[in-house]
Image (cartoon, rainbow, N blue to C red; front, side, top):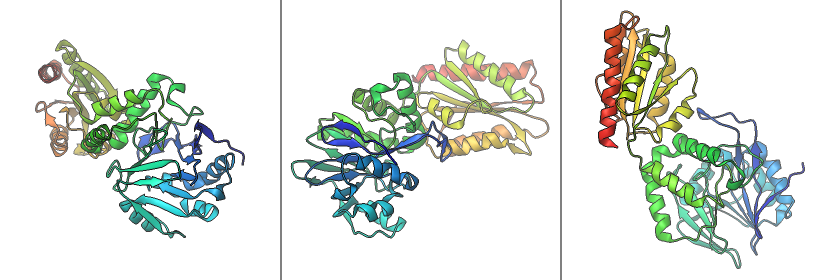
Length: 396
């Protein structure tokens, strides 16, 4: 196949692949993605990361538009997840590099994933001389795998950041300033919320570490999405805010409903929030994907979840949502539950228990109504919303 590399500067090229068809990644609804690999032309020609196995030919064709792939001396694996490493066995047979580098944990992961025809050389926080060009390795354990690391091209100021600062977005544009700024921020936030949020404390420490290294970063080249060259300070600022979230006046009301009774309570709660000065957003699960709701949680002060009782428990759609957010570890918010029931008032108690298991502070006992909520139940829902707004005002 024919495919062209994209020049980042005089000696670095993007040689990755575009996956226009990917619409889901571990429960995260995506707009396609890219698998980014980068080629450095130096005395020791170096490939940083590879692609998913079924895109290997596309990557090799892009490399061939710059240099014969067999001329590559080194390959560096910043991240061994299969969307960046599964092409390695094929690539190694074709390229036959002198050395393959990975973090110490990366060596283990690669050897456990594959039977490679080459010994993997471990690196820590160290340097590699390419001959007039120098790479620094920065360990980034659990951002977001144990073996993850960054590679920094010292002379050219390019930070190859594996999954950090990435996004799942299939696009013909290779640079951040070629994409609408609003979409850029949203897709970056969606990626952070759905992939990196569980490791926010480590992200905060990494940002501090990068600050102390005082790197002259001219580009950030992640393994997914566009290369950052114009909005570097923006993405660093976003990661700073997302990794250290504060309660805001924004409150999400997420629910599913069977005969609109739970929906009526959701509307009443939102009206109470508005009256109390909060900024509610109603996001029914029938209209919004869980991964988009999670994105809104990054700057929300409260999550209020509603559900009818179903077979003595939580409706499956709501149960799936609660399971999804459990692993993402949003703990800065207030939580509250509401629901309707016919003969078993079980769901609010069960949702509260799930909030507590997630270490999310409860804003109240919650509200539930039998069958269609009457005026008294709607007033309770309104008061719950008003009370949450007051708590958010005191904490924001």
